[in-house]
Each structure stands twice: as structure tokens, then as C-alpha cells.
Length: 260
Image (cartoon, rainbow, N blue to C red):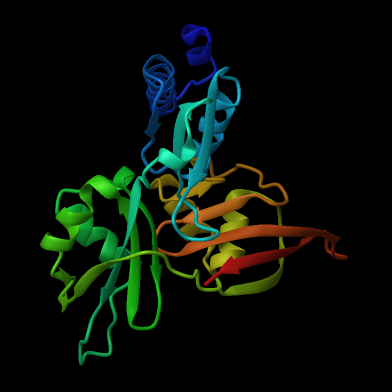
């Protein structure tokens, strides 16, 4: 593959950097008849990875995130003749438990903040799944021991941790919202999905806290399409499930799925 032509397809610096890393891994596997795992990738990065890898000859690949229906995956790239049974699992799953008398329980942001605060890069972490009295963190196998020995508190809550072989994914709670909006602009959809005023929604967009289909957007006037996924940092994500026509006053009827 002509690397310079590949780079021309990506205007964003981070996308070009990711493409270069993937192509470097491809060349390493091809020359050394071996395998290599990527960092954990978000859905936007996964699309780039699959687009690049599917074009490569003599190369096989698969993705794995450790938890069923997870959001972040890493890709294992290998020479097509390499025996996949010889590939060591490139991630570990850590189970955290706590016994705090406080009613407050550590959340996703607490775990992410504590681990990153200990010097771990986000790309080394997969999904973080919370259950009633436990949390599960998928991480690169090369940094699992470091996390086990260095994370003794999450926020102000003492935690214990151990390696586990696997974990069953909890069902994601969903809420269906039926609403009417003046337009399908991003700020209108965010307002309807998260219960915010359009002014507040515009402020959050301009501050860089909003992503559409896992890509950062800063245009309040962006028009949302059916099936678009909108993520709002600290609030979760919504999907524009359906556009259901118009009311008599020419407002647009929509159905939003909110993950809670």
C-alpha cells in the first residue's frame, strides 16, 4: 500500500498518526512472520483500522475487547499464515471491589480518573464496566500488574483488586424519549435528549464536550441524521432512533434512545 496515498485520506492529525501506527504494525508482522496488538481503539478509530487492515495482503486480523458488546477494542494483527492459537491474549481483566459504609459508590469517571492519574495512558484501557459492588477494567496485559499494585483507592473509597478470566456484560439500561424539535440541529437534539436548554447545549458543543459517532464536533448548526450517536462527556450518550414526521405546527417528531 502506498503510504503517502493513505495519509491523503485523513485530514485529522490524530487519524494520520493512527494510520501510520497500524501500517507500521502491518510491516512488522509481515517481515517478522509474527503478530502485534494495537492499543485500545474507540469506534471511530476502529473504522480506520478495519479500512486499512482489510486492504492488506498476507495479513490477518481480529478485534477483541474482553467484554461482550464493549465499545473499545484492540486489534490483533498477524501474518496470515501465523497460527492464531499461539497468540497470547493481549489484555487482562481486573475486578475491583469495595466495602465502604458510605452510600456513595465509585463511578466510571472515578475509576478512569484514578487510573489515568497513576500515569496510565487512556489508550492502554478498554471498557470499564460497573456492577453493584464491583467494577471491571479491561487493560493492556503489560500494565495490569502496575494497576493492581498501585490503585488502592478510587476517589476516597478504598478498593481491592484481582485478575479474573472473564466477566459477563451487564445489560445496558435504555430510556426511550419521544419529543418534538424545531429542527434536527445538534443543539436541538442534545436539548431534547439530555433535558437541556438550547443555549446550554450550544455552550457544551463549543467547549468540545460533544461527539457525533465518536468524532468531535464543534458546529452547533450540525444537522443530525437518523441513527447518529451523540456522546456528551459526563452525561452519557443518545441515539436518534427515528424521525417521525411533523406536527401541525411544523415541529419535527423524533424518538431518541438514551443510555442510562
